[in-house]
Image 1 (tube, rainbow, N blue to C red):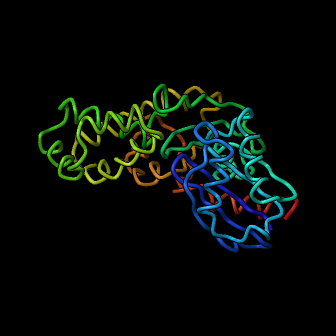
Image 2 (cartoon, rainbow, N blue to C red):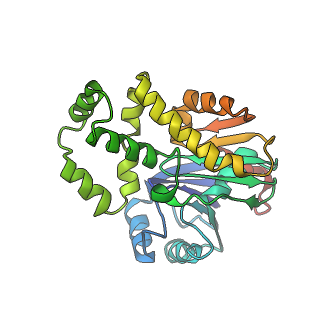
Length: 281
Protein backbone atom coordinates (compact mmCIF):
# COMPACT_ATOMS: atom_id res chain seq x y z
CA UNK A 1 0.00 0.00 0.00
CA UNK A 2 0.95 3.63 -0.43
CA UNK A 3 1.58 5.69 2.71
CA UNK A 4 1.12 9.45 2.34
CA UNK A 5 2.48 11.85 4.95
CA UNK A 6 1.80 15.56 5.18
CA UNK A 7 4.02 17.05 7.86
CA UNK A 8 3.97 20.61 9.13
CA UNK A 9 5.91 22.06 12.01
CA UNK A 10 3.21 21.07 14.50
CA UNK A 11 1.77 17.75 13.31
CA UNK A 12 2.12 15.01 10.70
CA UNK A 13 -0.93 13.38 9.16
CA UNK A 14 -0.49 9.89 7.73
CA UNK A 15 -2.83 8.09 5.34
CA UNK A 16 -2.66 4.56 3.96
CA UNK A 17 -4.12 4.36 0.45
CA UNK A 18 -5.31 1.29 -1.39
CA UNK A 19 -7.16 1.29 -4.70
CA UNK A 20 -9.72 4.11 -4.63
CA UNK A 21 -9.73 5.25 -1.05
CA UNK A 22 -7.73 6.19 2.00
CA UNK A 23 -7.85 3.08 4.18
CA UNK A 24 -6.61 4.43 7.50
CA UNK A 25 -5.21 7.65 8.90
CA UNK A 26 -3.33 8.65 12.03
CA UNK A 27 -1.52 11.66 13.42
CA UNK A 28 1.87 12.22 15.03
CA UNK A 29 3.85 15.27 16.06
CA UNK A 30 5.48 17.26 13.28
CA UNK A 31 8.69 16.05 11.66
CA UNK A 32 11.22 18.66 10.58
CA UNK A 33 14.82 17.65 9.75
CA UNK A 34 16.08 21.13 10.66
CA UNK A 35 15.11 20.48 14.28
CA UNK A 36 15.26 16.68 14.60
CA UNK A 37 17.90 14.03 14.03
CA UNK A 38 17.30 10.70 12.33
CA UNK A 39 17.12 9.10 15.76
CA UNK A 40 14.57 11.65 16.94
CA UNK A 41 12.33 10.87 13.97
CA UNK A 42 12.57 7.09 14.39
CA UNK A 43 11.84 7.45 18.12
CA UNK A 44 8.81 9.61 17.38
CA UNK A 45 7.47 7.02 14.93
CA UNK A 46 8.00 4.20 17.40
CA UNK A 47 5.99 6.07 20.03
CA UNK A 48 3.23 7.66 17.96
CA UNK A 49 2.67 5.89 14.61
CA UNK A 50 -0.41 3.68 15.10
CA UNK A 51 -1.03 2.19 11.65
CA UNK A 52 0.32 -1.14 10.40
CA UNK A 53 3.79 -0.48 9.05
CA UNK A 54 4.14 -3.95 7.54
CA UNK A 55 1.69 -3.23 4.70
CA UNK A 56 3.57 -0.11 3.51
CA UNK A 57 5.36 -0.59 0.18
CA UNK A 58 5.69 3.02 -1.07
CA UNK A 59 6.01 6.20 1.02
CA UNK A 60 5.42 9.73 -0.23
CA UNK A 61 6.50 12.06 2.56
CA UNK A 62 5.85 15.80 2.22
CA UNK A 63 7.24 17.97 5.00
CA UNK A 64 8.38 21.35 6.18
CA UNK A 65 12.15 21.61 6.20
CA UNK A 66 12.48 18.90 3.54
CA UNK A 67 14.99 20.74 1.38
CA UNK A 68 17.27 18.79 -1.00
CA UNK A 69 19.98 18.89 1.65
CA UNK A 70 17.78 17.67 4.49
CA UNK A 71 15.48 15.21 2.69
CA UNK A 72 17.98 12.30 2.88
CA UNK A 73 17.85 12.43 6.69
CA UNK A 74 14.06 11.96 6.63
CA UNK A 75 14.37 9.24 3.99
CA UNK A 76 16.89 7.33 6.11
CA UNK A 77 14.65 7.57 9.19
CA UNK A 78 11.63 6.33 7.24
CA UNK A 79 13.67 3.49 5.76
CA UNK A 80 14.88 2.44 9.21
CA UNK A 81 11.34 2.29 10.56
CA UNK A 82 9.25 1.06 7.61
CA UNK A 83 11.67 -0.77 5.26
CA UNK A 84 9.50 -0.02 2.19
CA UNK A 85 10.32 -0.65 -1.46
CA UNK A 86 10.33 3.04 -2.34
CA UNK A 87 10.56 6.37 -0.47
CA UNK A 88 10.05 9.81 -1.97
CA UNK A 89 10.57 12.85 0.26
CA UNK A 90 9.33 16.23 -0.97
CA UNK A 91 8.66 19.65 0.50
CA UNK A 92 5.36 20.56 2.13
CA UNK A 93 5.13 23.23 -0.56
CA UNK A 94 4.94 20.60 -3.33
CA UNK A 95 2.23 18.89 -1.27
CA UNK A 96 0.28 22.15 -1.21
CA UNK A 97 0.77 22.69 -4.94
CA UNK A 98 -0.32 19.18 -5.90
CA UNK A 99 -3.25 19.30 -3.48
CA UNK A 100 -4.53 22.72 -4.50
CA UNK A 101 -3.70 22.82 -8.20
CA UNK A 102 -3.62 19.12 -9.13
CA UNK A 103 -2.32 19.34 -12.73
CA UNK A 104 -3.28 22.98 -13.32
CA UNK A 105 -1.06 26.05 -13.28
CA UNK A 106 -1.42 28.32 -10.23
CA UNK A 107 0.03 30.01 -7.17
CA UNK A 108 -0.03 27.70 -4.14
CA UNK A 109 0.32 29.11 -0.62
CA UNK A 110 0.63 27.69 2.88
CA UNK A 111 -0.64 29.68 5.85
CA UNK A 112 -0.29 27.49 8.93
CA UNK A 113 2.28 27.47 11.73
CA UNK A 114 4.63 28.80 9.04
CA UNK A 115 3.94 30.30 5.62
CA UNK A 116 5.23 29.63 2.13
CA UNK A 117 4.27 30.04 -1.51
CA UNK A 118 5.24 29.03 -5.03
CA UNK A 119 4.38 29.29 -8.71
CA UNK A 120 3.42 25.79 -9.91
CA UNK A 121 3.19 25.01 -13.62
CA UNK A 122 0.97 21.95 -13.23
CA UNK A 123 3.90 19.56 -12.94
CA UNK A 124 6.55 21.17 -10.77
CA UNK A 125 7.44 24.24 -8.74
CA UNK A 126 9.12 26.68 -11.11
CA UNK A 127 9.45 29.74 -8.86
CA UNK A 128 9.52 30.16 -5.10
CA UNK A 129 10.02 33.21 -2.94
CA UNK A 130 11.93 31.93 0.12
CA UNK A 131 9.89 31.64 3.31
CA UNK A 132 12.87 32.49 5.58
CA UNK A 133 11.17 31.30 8.77
CA UNK A 134 9.36 33.17 11.50
CA UNK A 135 12.23 35.56 12.30
CA UNK A 136 13.02 36.83 8.79
CA UNK A 137 9.79 35.88 6.99
CA UNK A 138 6.75 33.61 7.47
CA UNK A 139 4.45 36.60 7.02
CA UNK A 140 0.81 35.76 7.76
CA UNK A 141 1.68 32.54 9.57
CA UNK A 142 0.48 31.42 12.98
CA UNK A 143 4.00 31.90 14.36
CA UNK A 144 4.24 35.49 13.13
CA UNK A 145 0.69 36.32 14.23
CA UNK A 146 1.56 34.97 17.68
CA UNK A 147 4.83 36.90 17.70
CA UNK A 148 3.03 40.14 16.85
CA UNK A 149 0.35 39.50 19.47
CA UNK A 150 2.83 38.74 22.27
CA UNK A 151 4.95 41.77 21.41
CA UNK A 152 1.89 44.02 21.46
CA UNK A 153 0.61 42.50 24.72
CA UNK A 154 3.93 42.83 26.55
CA UNK A 155 4.54 46.36 25.26
CA UNK A 156 0.92 47.35 26.01
CA UNK A 157 0.13 48.31 22.43
CA UNK A 158 -3.35 46.81 22.63
CA UNK A 159 -6.35 47.98 24.62
CA UNK A 160 -6.48 47.16 28.36
CA UNK A 161 -9.51 44.92 27.73
CA UNK A 162 -7.59 42.69 25.31
CA UNK A 163 -4.50 42.65 27.56
CA UNK A 164 -6.69 41.59 30.48
CA UNK A 165 -8.41 38.94 28.36
CA UNK A 166 -5.00 37.57 27.38
CA UNK A 167 -3.79 37.27 30.97
CA UNK A 168 -7.09 35.65 31.95
CA UNK A 169 -6.71 33.11 29.12
CA UNK A 170 -3.04 32.43 29.96
CA UNK A 171 -2.77 33.14 33.72
CA UNK A 172 0.53 31.31 34.24
CA UNK A 173 2.31 32.85 31.26
CA UNK A 174 4.64 35.50 32.65
CA UNK A 175 6.99 37.68 30.63
CA UNK A 176 9.91 35.57 31.85
CA UNK A 177 8.15 32.37 30.75
CA UNK A 178 7.47 33.82 27.29
CA UNK A 179 11.12 34.85 26.90
CA UNK A 180 12.19 31.36 27.99
CA UNK A 181 9.87 29.62 25.52
CA UNK A 182 10.76 31.87 22.58
CA UNK A 183 14.51 32.19 23.01
CA UNK A 184 15.70 29.12 24.90
CA UNK A 185 13.38 26.17 24.30
CA UNK A 186 12.86 24.09 21.16
CA UNK A 187 10.14 24.73 18.58
CA UNK A 188 9.44 28.39 19.45
CA UNK A 189 7.39 28.61 16.23
CA UNK A 190 4.92 26.08 17.63
CA UNK A 191 4.73 28.02 20.89
CA UNK A 192 4.01 31.28 19.09
CA UNK A 193 1.43 29.72 16.77
CA UNK A 194 -0.66 28.45 19.68
CA UNK A 195 -2.00 31.97 20.25
CA UNK A 196 -3.86 32.04 16.92
CA UNK A 197 -7.12 30.84 18.61
CA UNK A 198 -6.96 33.88 20.92
CA UNK A 199 -6.73 36.14 17.86
CA UNK A 200 -9.64 34.32 16.25
CA UNK A 201 -11.74 34.70 19.41
CA UNK A 202 -11.08 38.46 19.35
CA UNK A 203 -11.18 39.04 15.58
CA UNK A 204 -14.23 41.30 15.96
CA UNK A 205 -12.02 43.81 17.80
CA UNK A 206 -10.73 46.36 15.25
CA UNK A 207 -7.14 46.28 16.56
CA UNK A 208 -6.94 42.48 16.32
CA UNK A 209 -8.54 42.51 12.89
CA UNK A 210 -5.93 45.08 11.84
CA UNK A 211 -3.06 42.99 13.25
CA UNK A 212 -4.19 39.90 11.30
CA UNK A 213 -4.95 41.69 8.04
CA UNK A 214 -1.71 43.68 8.18
CA UNK A 215 0.18 40.38 8.39
CA UNK A 216 -1.77 38.95 5.43
CA UNK A 217 -0.99 42.15 3.52
CA UNK A 218 2.71 41.64 4.26
CA UNK A 219 2.44 38.07 2.97
CA UNK A 220 0.93 39.19 -0.32
CA UNK A 221 3.31 42.11 -0.86
CA UNK A 222 6.47 40.22 0.09
CA UNK A 223 5.55 36.97 -1.65
CA UNK A 224 2.59 36.77 -4.05
CA UNK A 225 3.20 40.02 -5.88
CA UNK A 226 6.75 38.92 -6.72
CA UNK A 227 5.61 36.09 -8.98
CA UNK A 228 5.57 36.62 -12.75
CA UNK A 229 2.06 35.30 -13.42
CA UNK A 230 -0.22 37.71 -11.57
CA UNK A 231 -3.45 36.54 -13.26
CA UNK A 232 -3.17 32.92 -12.12
CA UNK A 233 -5.51 31.71 -9.36
CA UNK A 234 -4.02 32.03 -5.88
CA UNK A 235 -4.81 29.04 -3.64
CA UNK A 236 -4.29 28.66 0.10
CA UNK A 237 -4.06 25.74 2.50
CA UNK A 238 -3.42 25.65 6.24
CA UNK A 239 -5.19 26.29 9.51
CA UNK A 240 -4.59 30.05 9.48
CA UNK A 241 -5.91 30.47 5.93
CA UNK A 242 -8.94 28.33 6.77
CA UNK A 243 -9.94 29.86 10.11
CA UNK A 244 -9.19 33.46 9.10
CA UNK A 245 -10.73 32.95 5.65
CA UNK A 246 -12.91 36.07 5.76
CA UNK A 247 -9.94 38.31 6.58
CA UNK A 248 -7.80 36.62 3.93
CA UNK A 249 -10.50 37.06 1.29
CA UNK A 250 -10.82 40.73 2.23
CA UNK A 251 -7.08 41.37 1.84
CA UNK A 252 -6.88 39.43 -1.44
CA UNK A 253 -9.73 41.52 -2.86
CA UNK A 254 -7.82 44.72 -2.08
CA UNK A 255 -5.01 43.45 -4.32
CA UNK A 256 -7.48 42.19 -6.97
CA UNK A 257 -6.05 38.67 -6.70
CA UNK A 258 -8.03 35.88 -8.41
CA UNK A 259 -8.68 33.78 -5.30
CA UNK A 260 -8.84 30.02 -5.78
CA UNK A 261 -9.28 27.28 -3.17
CA UNK A 262 -8.88 27.74 0.58
CA UNK A 263 -8.52 24.42 2.41
CA UNK A 264 -7.76 23.51 6.01
CA UNK A 265 -5.05 21.02 5.11
CA UNK A 266 -3.58 19.57 1.92
CA UNK A 267 -4.05 15.87 2.67
CA UNK A 268 -7.50 15.32 1.05
CA UNK A 269 -6.35 16.98 -2.17
CA UNK A 270 -3.05 15.11 -2.00
CA UNK A 271 -4.88 11.79 -1.68
CA UNK A 272 -6.97 12.77 -4.70
CA UNK A 273 -3.81 13.63 -6.65
CA UNK A 274 -2.11 10.31 -5.93
CA UNK A 275 -5.25 8.26 -6.58
CA UNK A 276 -5.64 9.93 -9.95
CA UNK A 277 -2.07 10.38 -11.15
CA UNK A 278 0.21 8.00 -9.24
CA UNK A 279 1.63 5.41 -11.68
CA UNK A 280 2.26 3.00 -8.79
CA UNK A 281 -1.33 3.04 -7.66
